[in-house]
Image (tube, rainbow, N blue to C red; front, side, top):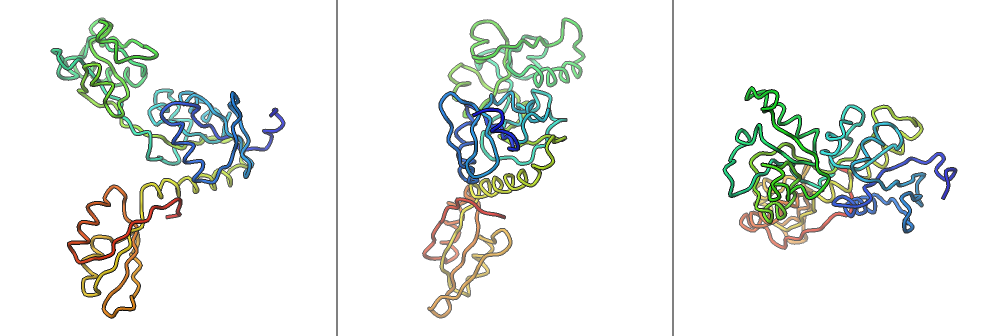
Amino acid sequence: MNVDSLDGRLLFAIPKKGRLYEKCLSILAGADIQFRRHARLDVCLVLNHPIALVFLPASDIPSFVGKGNVDLGITGHDVILESQMQEHVIEELRLGFGKCALQVQVPEAGSIKTVEDLAGKRVVTSFEVLSGEYFGKLDAKLQLSGEKRTNIEYVGGSVEAACALGLADGIVDLVESGDTMRAAGLHAIATVLESEAVLVKSRVPKHEAHAGLINLITNRIKGVVAANKYAICQYNVARDRLPAVIAITPGRRAPTVSPLEEDGWVAVNSMVEKKKLAEIMDNLVEAGAEDILIFNLDNCRV
C-alpha cells in the first residue's frame, strides 16, 4: 500500500471501532463492497470497485468529509453537530442503526428534578458544543448571566461517574440502552438530541469524477437499509376475503395477487415492515389468511 495505490479511488471513511463499526461492516457486505483489511492498517483497497476504505475515529469523519479529504463517510448525526460540520456535509441517508439519545441526566435520588433545577449549576459532558447550545438557550430563558450561568465542563470519558465523584450536579451523555445510566444511579430529565448513523458526503466535492460512483454506492446502501426495514409476507386466502387482508398488507405500492389451482383462493405477496410483523400476522389469521410465510431480504431497490 502506498500513496500511488489510492490515486483515482473514491475514499470512503468508516468508523474504526466502537458502536458503529460492526454495523458498518454489515452495510458494506450488503452493498457488495469487497475488501480485506490487513492488521494494523487503517486504509484498505476495495477489490471490486475503485474505492479505498479509510478507518477513522467517528468523531473525525465529519471534518475529513467536510474538508474534502475523503469523499464519503459514515458517522453519527450527533458527531456532525458536535464538530460543527453540518454546513460542510450533506447527510445523504439515515442508516437505521446506532440509534441513541443525547440526554441530560442527574442522580435519581437527588433534589434536581427538571432541567430548570439544573440550570446555573455544574454540568459535565463530552459534548461541549451541543450542551453549551442547549444550556445557553435555557440560561437565556431563565435570565441567568455571568457567574450564574450553567457551568459546562468537558471530560473525555466516564462521564457517568462525574456526579458520584462530586464533579458535577448533572451530566449530558449519550444513552443507547440506558443500562450504564441506571447502573450509575442516574436518570434522564431531558433529551437534547436524537441521533443515529448517517451516510455523508461533502457539500463541495473535490473529485467530480466520483459523482457516479457515489450515487451507485448510495443507492446500494439505500437498498441494504430498506432490506433491514422490510420483509416479504406471503399467504393464501379465499378471494372473497381479499379486501380485508389487503387492508392489512397493502404493500409499498400494491400487493401481488396470484390465483391458486384451488378455485376461489389466491396467493398474496406483500412487503411489510419488520417491526410490525407479529401484529400483521395476528391480524391476517383473524381475517382468514392461511399458510402465512415471512421471507427476509438481503437487499432491494424500493
